[in-house]
Image (cartoon, rainbow, N blue to C red; front, side):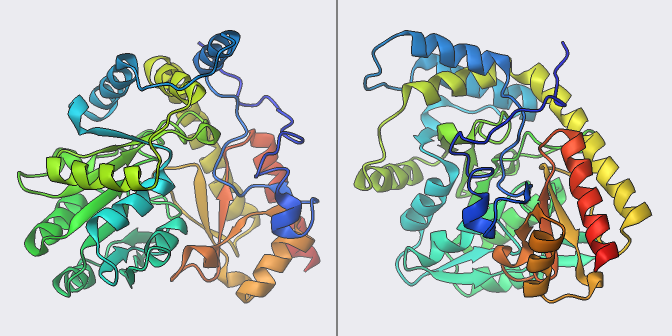
Length: 389
């Protein structure tokens, strides 16, 4: 099968945060939108067919989660990640961000410590601070162009009483796909100190050819307390449909999470989300395999262009995700100047690294989930802006 990822799709006028929201976020609509983490590619045809078929039925009433949905999820995780998941372990959720908040509420009392590993996706911070828990940072270390977990400091955090670690795996924005050894050490620390781990694996399927994601739960031992968040949203470019799930082997933890969701009245499902979720996992594999090759080629294109034309910007080589972490520190600008430069001079809308917390200063996050000519246009604009600057 062939898939046209070079196809231009006009998303303006669709209430798209990424496109129509540029003016509100950047102060001008005149930027190339390379920020919000969704892609400008059409979802798999199986998804659009499933949505059209569901829309053709004119009654959109309350809906439960059918057996076919659980079976599609289980088959996907088994085939792609070698992970056998029992249906009883699965808790459906309205998205990974609400799941982060639910986990913090369920596994840490007010005032207790929750660990995050910046620079990291910014809702990790608000999930802790907005719920009245204590935010504890375990910053990643940048060593020879590659990020690593500071296990000694993580051990101290756990020993000091941290109740929960929010792990981003694969990591957004630095693009690391954690190795089995790194994940085992994370589990060892959590096990020694009775700390729960919430592993956000929403990018688990977006791993470049030659790399392999390891589901943290496949390395767990009896008695480990961990929860895994998964979703088809990033994988198949359907984040606006808002459906994910938590996989929770421990019955007591399932009870705690269900109590939180019930308290927040987050139990209802959406018939369109269900149709897309099932169709993506059941029939989207060929599309995903082609996408990963396209994204790899785009990543390599950016790396080669930066090396040849923009030596002041260094790519932190990603192993997963379609989000590139750009080291712009050699441009010699502070963060306010850097943001202004990319918006007003280069006219490329990216996420400034500072929103991802400690270690983000001097960095920008570039979304390459777009036709390659759009990625190329962004690079040309940046090159011209630097020459002008």
